[in-house]
Image (cartoon, rainbow over all chains, first blue to last red; front, top):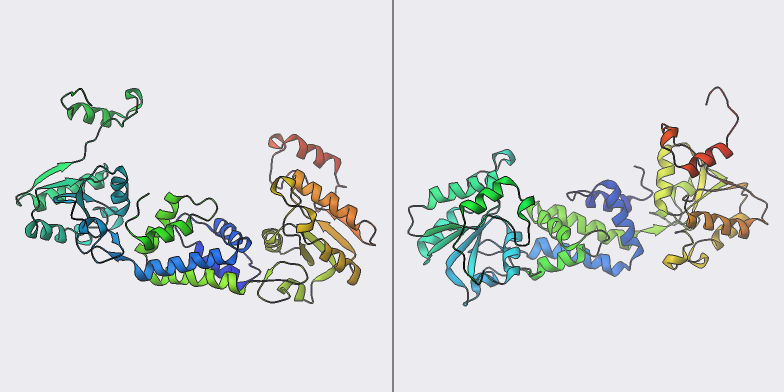
Amino acid sequence: MNYPSKVLERAVEEMSNLPGVGKRTALRLVLHMLHRPASQTENLADALQHLVQDIEYCEKCHTISDAPICQICANPLRDTSLICVVEDVRDVMAIENTGQYKGVYHVLGGRISPMDGIGPGQLYIDSLLKRIKNEDVAEIIFALSSTMEGDTTAFYLYKVLKNTPVNFSTIARGIGVGDELEYADEATLVRSIQNRIPYVESN
Amino acid sequence: MNYPSKVLERAVEEMSNLPGVGKRTALRLVLHMLHRPASQTENLADALQHLVQDIEYCEKCHTISDAPICQICANPLRDTSLICVVEDVRDVMAIENTGQYKGVYHVLGGRISPMDGIGPGQLYIDSLLKRIKNEDVAEIIFALSSTMEGDTTAFYLYKVLKNTPVNFSTIARGIGVGDELEYADEATLVRSIQNRIPYVESN
């Protein structure tokens, strides 16, 4: 592509380094930036600069944070004996959005995936072991994705942690609320029958 | 959405102000930026800052440029008697990529579109009239999109410019090179028959 301006070309090149953003989309976004007030793009540039300069990760749970200890770990009302193990910060945000979970988290930073070259050594497993040893942890909830990699990661964690005096649980798999049985895949249907729970009126 | 960090939230908000980028996509892009070397995101921020600060528009043809006069207008090898009128800089880039056009351009900055609140007053029409008066222009090529707005714009331009001593032409509409007749829409097929050209062996 011949760009009429080096400044334009550089902005397009940098934007197209983002995942899922091709040259054409990048050009469309950059031209949009030229049509809106310059201050808006300056704000964006400033926000990205601050992002990489100021972002911190919680020393305890490794979630993204503005301080050495995140708001969740620092909250005295949270139950620190209950640790929910997740893959990344998006999972923390999804669970937090429900407003129903009162425990704390541990962000692994990914899942074991030999295909992507990610082994246990690249995940925050040692620090989880340290938390179990040093804090008063009663239960670990595995909230990992229901894929081969997620299951492998849960299995590996269980093997590493099983000699510690904590209980392990995993989030329930089954038919989603509002879903029709007819359209559920077989694996999910089987799991939802195997893991059936006693019927209570208020459910 | 509850964000675990203000820095993260601000970056996501600013990214999601771009067209076609929702909150979820913005979060995915921002988390990607945190996983790659910080220097890459600093480069992006710097490129965007330079974009809005340093970008110029050619004083003659209004295309994006690094200087007051763009490379095309400043090129002594280009035929300045031939002006191709386009809607925006993407059209200039598309035609330049063919490497076959030796004239110059005039970027209108959009097309007449009452639905979007764009009237003739917001387009660079006066400066086109001035170019025709002051320069030795022989032909104006309308290279506008083949839509109602594009046609309206060409018609309006023709009405404004018809008393000047220049010739007008419009780019050919017809079956695309490599396309099969069977799949062409009716309007295109009709145009390609109406505007048929003498058969030459080298075509």
